[in-house]
Length: 77
Image (cartoon, rainbow, N blue to C red; front, side):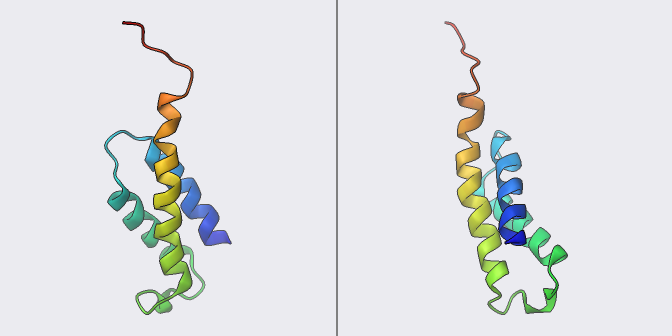
């Protein structure tokens, strides 16, 4: 649960940044999940947190791409 929350926050923050792709989000989320984990030695061996962190961050990061566009600032042309 803690891992999913952290990954979703990271995905939202990084997803809003233009040009930051899913790969960047996935690597950062994996690293942060490993850093805060109580069992970091299980990462790289099929740990569920190691699988869920990048997946959650990438999915939420894709939603974060919509935020700047729909923030209410319209460009008149």
